[in-house]
Length: 203
Image (tube, rainbow, N blue to C red; front, side):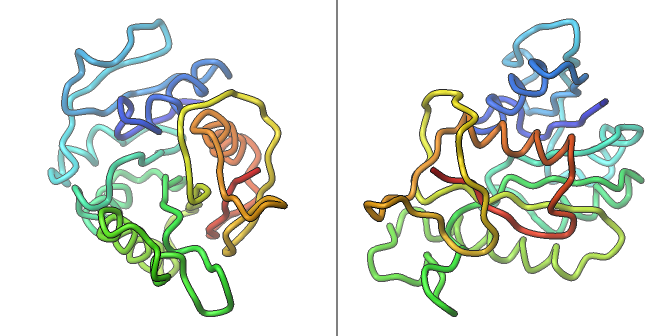
């Protein structure tokens, strides 16, 4: 497929770029600094700004799907959504956060006492973006939340998928590697199973 990837040089975006290339997709990497995008025959680096709705829509237009991998606290989720709709591309996949996942009925992770304050703004913005998507009917969207702890690690392909509840292992830990997160999101791109849904990945 021909994929527009916004934020292709970030922590998650760079793993998504590598996974998309590995699986034979063509990628337009939309970033602020195109010179930072790894060169390759299936990659086209384009300069784009998340706050430039018209410019972003023009860069996205004509692709089979859009993946957004940007920090939500440093962007405008409503503007991103509007740019995708303006582009005419219907399939939209979003790199979400873990903060809005439930740890108990009606209790979100970012509402717990031990949630790190440094991540609170990003987590709440992710929850707000998910609420915007839930009201969206024009796009075929999916929102993938990671585990509470996501870090560089192995590309194992061995993980669990869930919906709105935080996934934890037998010891109560919630973790996933960025590489396995990328496998899960690109897998959703190739074989959609969570249309207009949030889902999550963890060990």
